[in-house]
Image 1: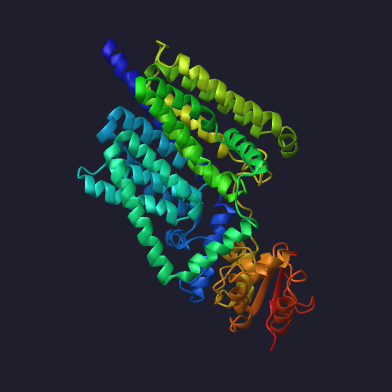
Image 2: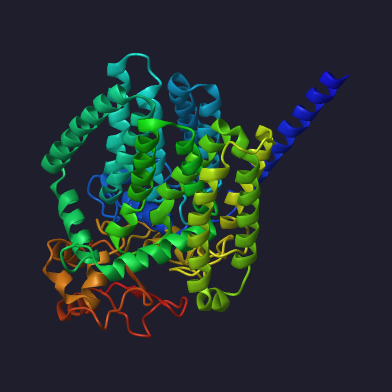
Amino acid sequence: MNMLRGGTTRTVGAALAVIAAGAAIAVASRPELNGDVRYVLGGLETAGRGGVSIWDVFVSRPLAYKLLMAAFAGDAPPLVRIKTYVAVAAVIAVLFLGVRRFAGRRAAAGIAGATGLALLVVPPWHFLEPDWTAAVAAVLAVGAACAPRPLWLGATLGGLAAMLVVAVKASTFPVALIALLVVFVLDRRRAAWTALSTVVWVGLWYVVSKHFLPWEWIWLSDLASLVHSKPQRIYLGDLRLLRIAIGDAAVLSPVVVLAPAAAAALVQRETGRRRWVGAVVAVVALGISLAPAYGQSEFFNYHFASTVVLAAGLWGAAFALRPGFRLPLVATTVLVAAVSIVLLRQPASWRLAHAGPVIGAYEIAAIALAVAAWFVAGRVRVSLPWPAGVIALCLAQIPAVLPGFPYVFSGYNYTIRVGPTPASPLAGLSERIGRDTPVLYLTYGTVNHSMGNPTTCRYPSPLWLQRGAFAPRMRLRPSYPDNMLCLTGSLDARYLIVQTAWFSIPKSAPDVQALIDERFDCSPAARIPSSPTLWVCPARG
């Protein structure tokens, strides 16, 4: 009878865990694709329809990322998510197989399960961003390096995946180092060969792309100049902004608060030299996960995508390997998640006004929990079953994806809320001028995505002309005159589409204004009626 009851309890628990995970993933799949993703898709779709090769089009992202996003061009958002979720599930399966070979089934289940939830129940602003894509590639690198039995095959595949981490966005290269550190924890010899393979793959990628696609590196250099007007160095102001952004990310994704505690619990189980090596690896890995955010100096929340994924992996490892730590880990996770939900429900003005104390409290809590974990881990006799961990981790991920909740607590985009994007009138505008009518866009790429009209300009969203209007130093970069060729070329464009809130014709350089006036009539009488912030100027003649 007791065995029957035990089996029934386990079945009910497993069912609740599956329901919780399924519900969390379903909620996370409802929001519209974020603006950055629609920007890239809009550029690829409209330039592609105009005959511009993906090798030539500029969408502010490297070639590897463009090739990935090309797989989603023209797809409806639900299909984009389905394709992505299938790919993530495959990556998690590889991770499970890899970790199982060196750490056993229990560790593999905890690490792969938690990492998978972090990648599937993902904040809308993280989803499909290059930084999030780099985190997926890093997870693949760990699994691919460890899953194959032959060392040479694991090193080759792991190095290739680690190269993708760098290729999707140069500033995410530190994430590849995290992957190599994780492999190092599992098997040092395999980590050394995977690191060598990574260097070879990255070198090959650099040589080939530099030779055949030199514009990719010109764009990369100009983008770096756009973000950093001065040589990058350690600035105290930037470190302060980084600290604030970390706290902001922790409010949105409570699992970040638990990461130091999870790491402390894992390290505390070791003894002697292994304990100190583990402590160093944990501190270095968590620190490196913050490097992309500091390096880019914009501190957007999605720059912490790899931090969230790493935190979830540590959480899963601690839950799996420290049964005596499960109760305090789950209890504190549920508590912090509940606090985050309450805080994120507050009006934007309140969140902005109270950001300092809230962020400070979260960071102090992270340190205090790590200290407590060192002394508590392994000493609690009451354990918890696996379903409790799944449910707790779902709660930790859910604040970032709940409908009506903000994209971030107090940072950039703190006024944007999770939910479907309102219906755009631009599809109707496209029908009015003709769906196949060529146009020239002076718009952010989301407008391109909504309209879909073809363009023959390789800069479907003319970033350099737009930034050149406000930052004259950008007019000296090679990308600027190349972007201007769209005004003298693209002769088949029947209309000029100007998003006045993004592109200011009056503030543009005099030669840009002259070329626009020469080719298109943007007088109020000639413009086709549209929204107040969108001009539709017919071509002259």
